[in-house]
Image (cartoon, rainbow, N blue to C red; front, side, top):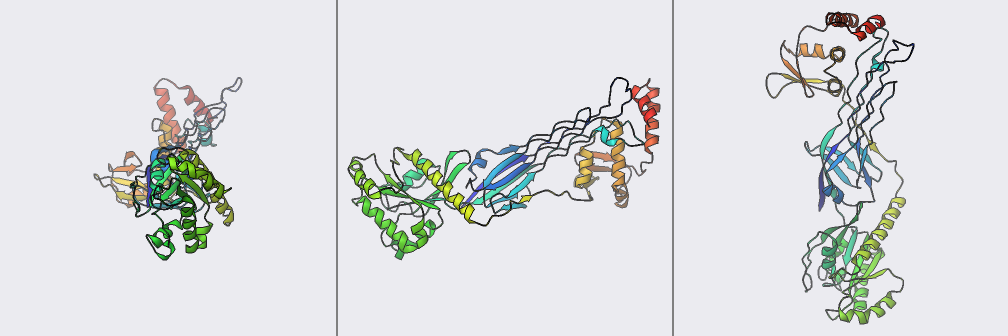
Length: 458
C-alpha cells in the first residue's frame, strides 16, 4: 500500500535593497549607505522516525516560509526570513508533481532536502559604489522565492499488528481508532487480508496499525490462513494481542492467548520476540467480569489493557500506551544502527543560459538562472537600474548570443516574466556618458539636488 500526499511549497522572497544617503550635520554629501535585503527562508523536508505516515500532509497542503526583511539606511541589512521545516517519514520519495522528476529518496533519519529555495536579498546602493560611481541611486529588488508542487509517497509497513483468534474484535478496534473500514461481522474469518489504518493522536504523533487475518491453531503449518497471515505479521514492530474476555465463541480466553503465542513461536523466533500488549476486549459484556480477575492474575506484570472496542471504553488509553511503546522501539532501532551524518541536499544554480524559439508567437525565450535572477531583481521604474541591467546582460554575453541566434531588430525576447524588444545596436554608453546624460536631462527639467551631488561625486 502506498501512502501519498500532494503539497504546495513556497519559499520566502528576498528583501529589497535600500537606496539611502548618509545625512548628518556637517556631512552634506556623506555618500550611499543603503543596506542589503535579507534572504528569504527555505522550505525543507526532514526525514524522521517520529512519524510513520503522511497523514499530516494530507490535511495541511500548503507550506510557506517567511520573506527576508528589506534593507535600511546606515548600511543596516535586513534579517533573513525564517524557513519552514516539514517532517516526513523515513523512506519518503519526493517527486516534482508537474514534471514527475524524483527530487530525493529520503532513506535515513536526519536526511534533509531543500525543496523550495528562498530568494536572494536585493543589494542596497552602497554595494554599487565605486571610484567612478560614487553616488549610485539604484538598488535591487528581492528575488522571488521558489514555488512548486510536490508529490510525496511512502510505502506503508504496519508499525502495530493486531493478532488474535477470529471474532476477537480486531476489526472493530481498527475501525474505532482510524478511518479504515474493515468488514465487521460476528463470524470467523471476516477479514481475509490485512487492513491498514492510520491512528492519529496529535500532530506528528501517528502510526500505522494492521488488522491481520484471524489466526488459528496449526497456522505455522499452513492451517487456516496460515503462512499468508504470519508473513504479514513479520513486518510489524509490535503486536496488540486481542483476547475475547467474554468467551463469546465458547473458548477459554487464557487458552486462546497461549495458543496464538505458541503459533508465533513455532513460526519463527522473530515473531516470538516481538513486543506485545495484551488487550482484554469485550469487557462491556456480563460474562467478561467473571473472567477478568483470573486473566489479570495469570498475566502478572505483562503489559495489558482492559477495553471494549464496541463502546470505546479504555481505547484512548490503549492507543497512547501503544504509541509510547512504539516510540521506545523506534528509538532503540535508531540507536542500534550505525550513526550516519545527516545529509542535506541543496540547490546549485545552473551556469550559462540557453536561447530557444518561443512556443507562442515569433519571439525567443532565454532560460538560465543567472540571467533570470538579474532580470527579476531589477527595479524597472528606476532608469539607472535598467541601464545597469543592460550592462550586466552584455557582460554575461547575452547580446552576442542573441546575435549568433539570428535574433533580429524588433524581435521579442522573454526572460522570466519580462518581454524585451531586441536591438542590434549594442549599448555603447559608458558610465560617465550615462551619468552626464542624466544630469543634462535633470537640468532641462528644472534642476535636481541629487544630480548636483552625482556631478560632484562622479
